[in-house]
Length: 232
Image (tube, rainbow, N blue to C red; front, side, top):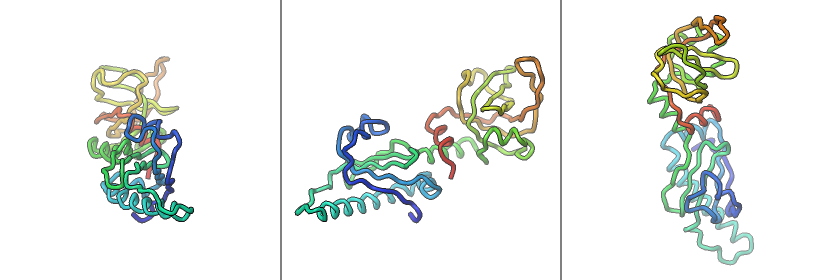
């Protein structure tokens, strides 16, 4: 895929494969061929689609050939057979990780956060990802839109109303299911923006904060981490 860049280490004998995401895999404790792909808009789009599979197959073949040529060029009369060498592919910010146990074996995906984000958008009908602070500055700019955000559950204020918060931004949410969230739980929240709502804070003062109608939420840690880590 054009525009995707990265580096390859023909033999990575470090202990990195004994740490997540490769711990408790067939690669644990082995010397591996390690490929690191830069996290940018091009690689993000690739990982979010099914295009990564043929891309990584071609990349693995190219790296296999390059590593064999490097060994031969380094004074090795006969380069060792690398057909059974394990391969690990990582994105530089941890948004994607996969491994294979040989040159022709399938890729086993450990992490694919761009694809998890794409699934969230489809499952929850998200039209736009925003920061809570963006909504706090001008909720009427987003009125009627279905938005998604990473935010923390703060408190219930009635049977089906709650306040979510992140840093200095607070969001009023109507239609929240009963006993859906735990105190200080971080979630991906989805709702339709309705404007502002006057809310009584714990000290008894009323404040005007952005308001949403609740449409859904996910507490999937990998998906939430992907949203926080990168936006194409």
